[in-house]
Image (cartoon, rainbow, N blue to C red):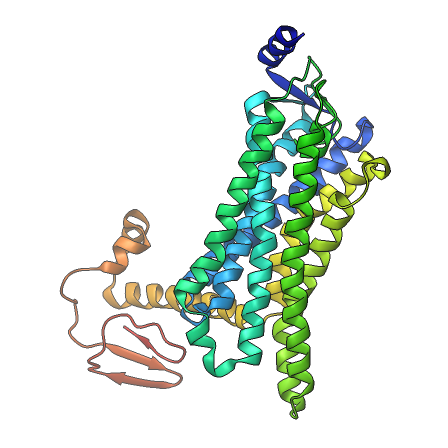
Length: 378
């Protein structure tokens, strides 16, 4: 029997994903909707990563954690989204054996990391509100890196254990997964050998990850609430609540979905309802997170405004410099903006023009380009 199991294990080269629905008339609708959701998610999270990295005013612990939150959102949505979209438009809804293992491993890695990064963000808000004078000392760069490195290592460890334990099992030729991606619960229905040990491991670590990370969030917010109630200034209370609102919204949405998915008896599991919940936290939540943090956060909106304003000033600089130096547009198009803006080593005209509102000055000692909120130096 062991030899037969080993043979079945080695010949199994792919799995068949049932997908979200069996109705062909809904495939095109689902593809269009999920494609838009995934595209918005990628643009939003990549934009958040770039924005928090480039803008000098967002170089704080809060936005350091927000950058890693966007990274984990991008990670687990990309682990699932592209393959799900491809299977919707193809007749053969298969995934290679090794790809299925990799998808499961990366999904577990990023989803567990997100839980503890959210708890680190809650601790960061606690320190900022309850110990503002010691904030920069407590939340030093070394501490911030430790608060994201430990979750990544912990998640990688659990990801490897879960994936290896599942994929060394004997599937005995059973390769139809009742889901739209390789998740641990549907995979555990396939092996012909006992899966009690891996089910116990998943249950213990799922409860530990959810409860421990949620406990940090709850304790942090209880202490934050007590500190806010002691504030005498209404403006101070409003500012404290506003800094926590976005994070609290994300926490409630994610944890409610994960508790529904993983912390319930096996007998009460319905894979159809699990599919809908999985769509929500694999695609919709990664799309909502950057929107929540950008729409509810004045600093992020300010950074977006500054980038957009700098873009307009850069275009104005290009136009005025070309007209001043009388350089044909074709040269700018041939060389490109970066090479053109570097210009000659010596300026054509030794005097610079300063544009500031309606005032025009000459013979400025400032460099040819300075980006500021009020002046453009040429």
